[in-house]
Image 1 (cartoon, rainbow, N blue to C red):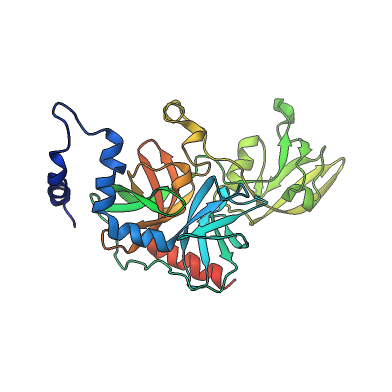
Image 2: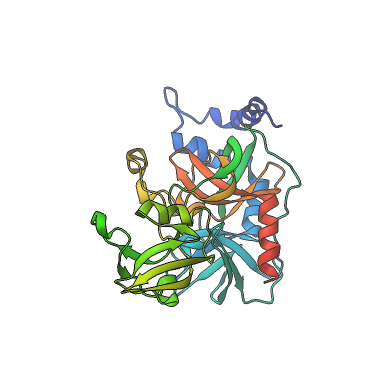
Length: 341
């Protein structure tokens, strides 16, 4: 483990030469302590890896406004990123190192992890991240991520592992049927509306149908339907029985992902709300929890240790003091699975 005291000693030694240039009776601005030039110099070797093995992804069609970062996972130009930030976008361009690529194809999406695999059209050989073989990462380890980015350079942000690697359960059901139920007590299982292009519409459910059972669970109130969908993933099929007029009918409904993320608490709102926090920030099977001060536009890129090895991919800015990353072990499996689909 790299002890924090040793790190501060090293950084202090690097800054001694600059002390004479700082006027008396002043202090270093907070942002300079986490994202200043002296910090960049201390992590230059990791920055160079981020320069080659991370991507800047734009969805504005002009390569001017960054939407999210990506992680280069193959020498052929495959890049993994946060799916909910790029899905449905008409125009995706990408910058890897200093080169801009306008032909980008969406290869596959994994809703469970909220990741999308992109592929740039190019004959160039790219530099993928090198995965770390490190096991469980103890609290207190230093980690390095993408911070801001100019057109020619990545910059770094640093933090530490601040909690145990663990599952982050969803605060709400991750899936929906695609129906709207009645608001009155005697109509809480009566379908009032079926959403367009939803699994319910594709299966044949209609407004006026009354839900009888779902997934083998008899339904007596609205909460029973949520229990029937508990643990289900987008793409799973759910057996649904309804009463249509005086006839019982059975349907097989494909569950769709729930749009948006968990509700913002008052503390979340005071910390920037939807402008700062990721739209999808829970419901992950396993994450590394670190305190690097990122933004929702800064996720998607690699999470490096001080040796420059990839220990994960940042997947969500979860709160004012927490960023989540998919661990390298799961990340490697996700990439292998998506490349062979």
